[in-house]
Length: 345
Image 1 (spheres, one colour):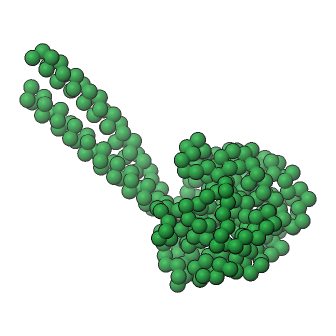
Image 2 (cartoon, helix red, strand yellow):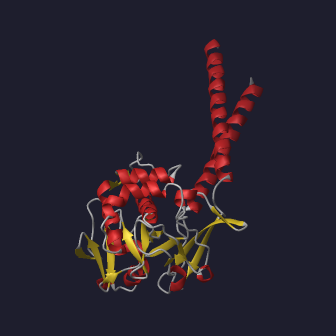
């Protein structure tokens, strides 16, 4: 009888400890749900090429050593694009890390190629299982400097670093999110690349620093939209993948250091332009435009590309809600069990 009493007592203490731990976890989950970014990001769809591809006007030539200023006609934009300030703190130190790689460049296209190659040589692609690779940084200045020093990183980190390095050299760049929804794909398959505004071409050009490639569409440097259209319209023969000066068919190109679960071309099923490049100043936080505090994401849609919601905030938010409910259920059941046991005793 005494042993039974001791066992019940120990069980009650253990249950109380577990109950406290669950309650702490519940408070943490509630905090996460309350501070989730859902609702502060605006997803917009467009089928107008001009919404995605608008010109950037430079005021100070094409040199590396002169201060850069740029502007766009904001009245033509479908949403506010928040540009990094040319004088943002940290840009100069980033510029110092890449200046030797681009010094002596022939034109903006050559500059972008040199920068892409430098980052590729320094980095390795880290799969999702490589937990030592930090996907989020408190400081994008630290992120960019770390990528430029070398190591294993995710494609998002590598592309953001090249984008910021481009800005440090006075060249505007923006982040592009590709996503596959092919029936052959398993789950979420996304990839980050960038587009750089090349002043001599008056065009945004797609570069992938993770794989060290760019694309040609009908033998001219391509935008993301041009590759996308070729893919969805079955005209992949019009696109060539360029790596280290060699041409590869889009249908068969692969890369040993970057092995996607789907074919490379499938990543162009959907794409999205992130309407800001001020990560150095504001990190992942939402920016403020007038009285609104929002991030804008512009998704391309057309007859063969129906509107598609990029899998970002909603799945994570629903998982948090599910964990919150599940954890609360455990708390209620455990507390009820303890109360019933006390009454019985």
